[in-house]
Image (cartoon, rainbow, N blue to C red; front, top):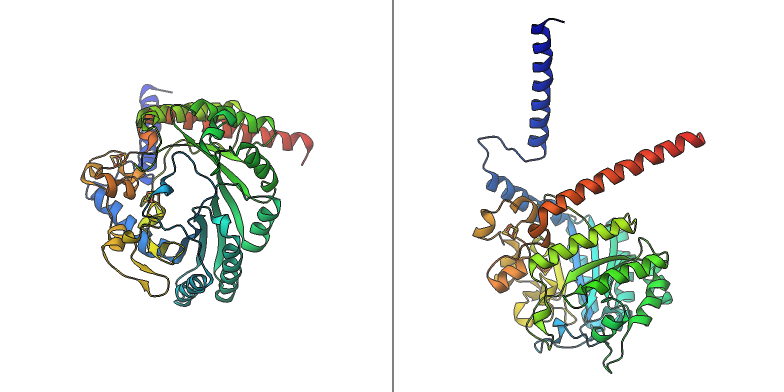
Length: 417
Ligand code: SF4
Ligand code: SF4
């Protein structure tokens, strides 16, 4: 081959590579055409998802009780403004009517309920009654129905887990275990001061047959190492992917006797979380926490149409952090919602001016709006503080998944299947 041909072949390959990469970067949104204004594109996507696509899903977070059978040291539910009560039959009937009205307009294609509290299982009857009504309504209107529960796990025994799955379409439960007994039993205590570790482990064992359990470990600088031990403790029992264990930083809500000097800074928690992800590989867990962010159109359900949190009195809110704080509500299930500022501020919430300048905006969308409303500044997600490390972990995850796919193919070939 003469020089000209070699040059031409090299040029063609290079050109192809450049175009391929450019196409990939365009398609994935890393590069945008010159005439496009990225902020406007993000806003249009955001509004479409909040009011059109996402609006076809009715999501209710229902607090069946604001009472609790525990007295955890850091709990924000201790706020004196909250009225501790259970949802009675009259409010339940109003909740059913509220759902009926939403399903009757014909735009709702999916209905999801998160049972919440206080402790929702202190009012199991409300869950059983409402679930039965919801399932009936959804089957009449041909709407998909699914549910999950956030519980302290104390009452989540075999019978309850089975009934939640069989009769209430609950598929997933979030339970909190704050590490091994020496830490958990000092934090997650009953009203008489006794610890709850053994009861929880028994209930997780009993209910994992029916529900996918996510174990949240509320961590600070004191119990962080215990979260790692807890993961190993479950792995030693052979419970690999169910429960799925993940750490969450304890936040300062300024309303309890908790020693806030132990709270992780954003940086420290990010490093701790990355270490946790690496240890998940060591334990050969497939169900590791999401290691790298993806593009999102808005931050959370509280910003979306047809998303409501309902307290035991039937009052409506957008964010579950407000549940029971009456002056944050914007109507009730009997009379419907009022488009007052308590509601519209969520529907129209936008990333802060600081976020508009941030390189992470397309994959963060300004963080938790509740944080922004209460603190006046955004709270960046933990991975932001450690994104380079996360990129390496995401690559490692990608490679290990590819390897395991190819070894599965190889295994199939060898056995002739
Ligand atoms: S606003 Fe924040 S706390 Fe409320 S639901 Fe959304 S992410 Fe959660
Ligand atoms: S919350 Fe933080 S990371 Fe997210 S967009 Fe705003 S400044 Fe960026």
